[in-house]
Image 1 (cartoon, rainbow, N blue to C red):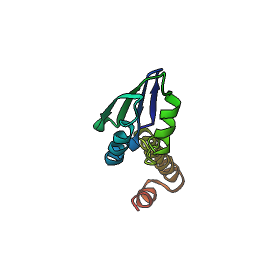
Image 2: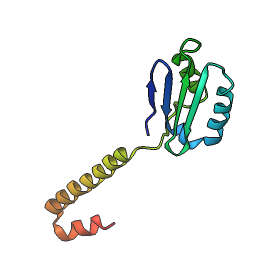
Image 3: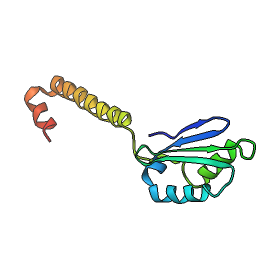
Length: 119
């Protein structure tokens, strides 16, 4: 999942791989954030990898909250490729193998190319 940030004048919502993968660290920071008077509510959806923070805009701005979250790694994404990236790589390999098979059949004949492709 890519990092998603929704920002209004009194609420920040962040959804990221880090929040999903590190629930203990997230819960610890939420405990610390709850001690800030300007923060009025925090809603944590562990299985969605999402945290919504409501705050008083007269006392705190969203940029400050986002800096805190970023400094704790909440904006980080997994380095694991996405489903689409995996599909593209797999499709490219299949296409390359198919083109190589057609070329071998034309150059060497069908029986020799079957032996080479089965290796």
